[in-house]
Length: 190
Image (cartoon, rainbow, N blue to C red; front, top):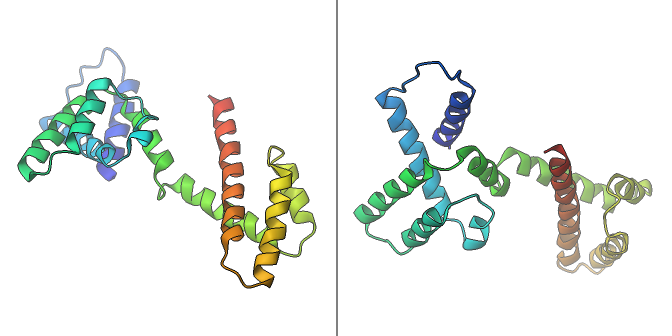
């Protein structure tokens, strides 16, 4: 992943460079960029078609990614990944990076979201009467009826010592509410 970040940072630096500067990257830098593009393409190859639909990719790159799923021989796969890397160099790597980070569960913003959801769920399930009111006032677009229903079901589930089905559903509701708020905030910021 460090090569991927290097490649995106390098592209951003080149965009900021003055037009009249005579900047020719060294052979090592070009090879590093080619390897980073290939690795980024390899990461795209493991994604599903539904996930790939969110990426700004050309039809030729999507076709090459689809073909890579049918190639199992080591040498052929390696050559095909080189080809995908070549196609990747024609795309906006920063946008692809941002989308990969959005769906990557280990990305810092996703870890932050996970922790925030867990804090809200624990607070909602505590005996604090103001927790539900605070959550609704912070996130006014939440489905209040569904939230209250899930809270009642979790309490019932815990009393009867049943498996945590509604406990998980409450987490999903909180996560969806928080991610919807994040998407709206990033949409207004653009």
